[in-house]
Image 1 (tube, rainbow, N blue to C red):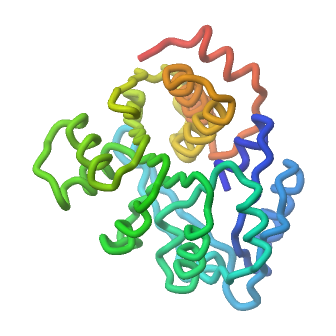
Image 2 (cartoon, helix red, strand yellow):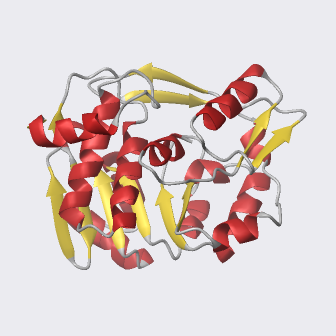
Amino acid sequence: MNVAYHLQKLGIAPALITRVGLDNYGKKLIQLMEKQGISTDYFQMDFELDTGKVLTTPGEGDAVHYEICSPVAWDNIQWDDHFLPLLANSNYFLYGSLGARSEASRRVLYQLLEVAPFRVLDINLRPPHYDRRVLEHLLRDVGLLKLNLEELELLTGWFSGYTTEASRMEALQARFQIPTVVVTRGSRGAVLLTEGRFYRHPGFTVELADTVGSGDAFLAGLLFKMTAGTDPPEGLEFASAMGALVASHHGPTPAYRAEEIRRIIHGGTKN
């Protein structure tokens, strides 16, 4: 949802497949999406389960601890044949590992992956909501994998003895044949590996409010630039500015203008 919000603000028209409850949270979510002009045509209503909620607690530094409530409506997404023309007319299909934690939604996700266009996987390893077997299935035929340093270490720890960041990224890319791997590094920026070459950006210094949703904003910025066909350095810079912008606000979906992104790029301080 956060990625869809930012893509819409950048002028990209996303569609979100999800399921919400009949509670006030579900109503507010639909209202928020409609206010932003984001399609809710593929929102399903659940008459038994509540809308999904995530409780956050600040940790040390810029870390955040998440409690992801379960079971909730998005654990019960059902197949709809209208998904097929939606994917056929899409440039990217973005999904996460959390969407596969329940059998019902995982079954639908696997069906979607069979017909999906360019696949973008944003791994969200929030214990206890993942296991190795499912993750390895989700990593198949991925075009772009986005993860953080902690997730990189966990995944590669299953099958490699590499210790450096670069060697871990190369091992992950080689094992699953992933064309592009991007790792966010918190306040230390991000690194992208594609076509045998590493690209790095140190990130931008901003007055921190909270980091919730900054990774989603980063990914939205990167996809926006990929859609425009820009080169990796420019894409990383823009994505890093998006992440920094959201980190300077409270909450994952703040109101902002495009000028603020350009201001960070041209006037902000790189770490």
